[in-house]
Amino acid sequence: MFSSTRLWFRQLHALIRKIFLITLVKHWLSTLLRALLIPVLILVLVLQIQNFTGDGSRYGVGEPSPIPSLAETLPPGEKLVFVQGSNAGSDVAGVIDKIRSGLKGSVEVADTEADLRKRCPTSLSGVTNCYAAIIFNDSPLTKAGNKTWSYTIRVSSARASTKFDITTPSKNHYAPLQLAVENAITNTTTTPNNYMFTRITQDEAAELKRRNFAATIVGGFGIVCFLSMISSVFHIIGMISTERESGMAQLIDVMTGGAASARVLSYLIAFDIIYLPSWIIFGALYASLLVPTSNAGIIILWQILSGLSLTSMSVFAATINIRYTAISMVIVLMLLATLCEILDSKPENVPALIVLILSAIFPSSSYIFFLNQLCRNEAQGLATNISKPAPHEPRIYEVTVSMLWGLLLLTIVFYPLLAILIEKCSHGVSNKGRKFTSTNGTTESSTALEIVDLTKTYNPSLWRRCCRRARPTIAVNSLSFSMQRKQVLCLLGINGSGKTTTLGLIAGTQKLTSGSINVNAPRSNLGKYNSVTWALY
Image 1 (cartoon, one colour):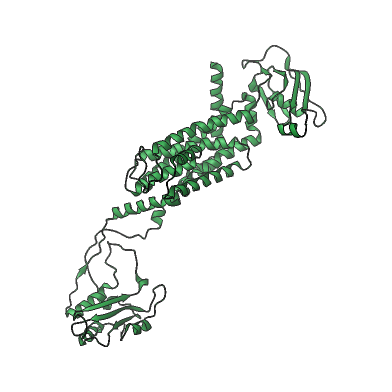
Image 2 (cartoon, one colour; image 1 turned 180 degrees about the vertical axis):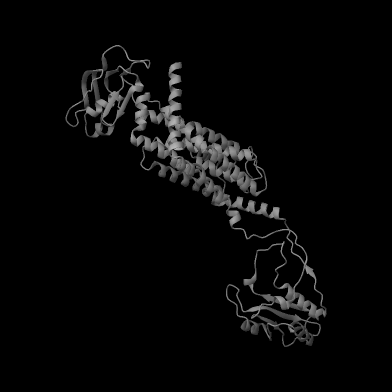
C-alpha cells in the first residue's frame, strides 16, 4: 500500500516536471506570451477604455483672469450681424455704433430674422460663416414692449466644445461679445475677471466616470473581459490533445499501469501554477481600475477560483475525443457567457436556480454573474458584500458572491474526477488477465513472456445484433506461446490475422476476452510504439 502510493507520487512528480520542461524551458517564450503578457494586455486595454474615450477635461475651480476685448477675439473674415427691427428704438442704433467702433471684422445690420438667415446660412452640422448674431428684442426707447433691454445672442453650434480645463484661462468665445454689449448698454468700460469652475472635483469626476463604466460592463463588456481567460483553454487542451495524438499519453499509461489520476492531476497542478501569476494580476487590475470600492482580496480570490475552475473544465474537455476540441470549447464558453449577459441585463426576474445551474456547469457563466455583481455594487458606490446580492432595481435574482464561490469550488473538484473516470474508461489500459513481476526485479526464470489461451472477441453493437443478426468477430482465438529473454519475437500473418490486436492485448490498450498474459518484468519496463511492443529485462 505504501509502496504503491509512493510510486503514484513519483509518477505525479515526473509528469509535472515533464510539463514544466515543455512549457517553461523548451517553449518559454510562447508560454510567457500566452500565459501572461497577452491576457494581461487584453484586460488592461478593456479596463482602460474609460480613459481612452475621455475628453481630457479638468474639474475644480480655476484662477480669475480678465475677459479679453471683442476686437481681440473676433476672428478675421467672419461676420458679426446685428438684427435691428423696424420698430426698434433709437437707443439700439447707438448701442450698435458703440460696439462696431474699433472692430476690424465685417459688421452687418439686418432688419429681420429672416434676413439674418439669408446672411448667415447654416449647415446641418451647425457650421456658418458668421461669428455670432445679436438680436435686440426690446429697449427703453422701443415703442412696443416692456421698455427694458432684452437681446439674444445666437452662435454657431459647431464652435461648442464639451472639453474644458479649469487650469487654463477661460476659452468662452462669446463672453467678450456679451461684455461688449453690456458695456455699450450701460455706457461703461469695465472689464471684469472671470474664472472657470465645476460642480464636482477631479476626483469626484473620475469616480463618476468609473461608476458609469462599471454600469457599461454589466451591459455587455463582461464578455470582452472574459477573453483574457481564454488563452489557458487553448493551451491546456492543445497540449493534452497533442500528447494523445503522438501516442505519448498511451505510452505513459502502458508504463504506469493506467495512472489516469496522476496524468489528470499533473495537468491541473502544472497549468494552475503556470497561470496563477496572471490570475493574481487580473484581480489586482480589477481592484485598482474597475472596482476599487470593493475588497481587493474578494476580487483576487474570485480570479484564482475562476482560473482553477476553467483549468479543470479544460482538462475534462480534452478527455473527450472531439475534433477541434479547443475551438468547440471556446465557442461553448463564449455562447454561454453571452447568454448570461442577456439574462443578467434583462429587467425581468431570472430564477435563481437557473443562475446557479449555469454557474455550476460553465465557468464562463459564473464569471459573468460574479463580474456583474461587482460592477453593480461599484455603480452604486458600495463595497461588495459576499453574503448579500448586489443592489438592482427591479431585483432580478437572489444570488450572492459566496454562493458563486461555492459553485466554483464544486466545479474545481467535480470536473477532474469526471476527467479521471473518462480517462480510465476511454483511454486507460486494461489489467484484466495480465500479470507482472514486482518492481524490485525479474524472477530467475528464463521465460520473458508467456501467453496462455489468449482470446479476443469483438461483440457487435446491440443495434446490429437485433436488426442484422451480426455475429461476434474473433480477432485472436486461443493463442498460446512463450518468449525467452533476449529474444526478438515477430508475429507474422496476413492482414486481419490479429497481430496488432495481440500486441495491444499485451500492452493493455485493449481488453482481452479470456486467457492470461504473464510478463516477467516490471510494468514500468513495458513500452509500446505503434505496432511494436518491447520490454527491458
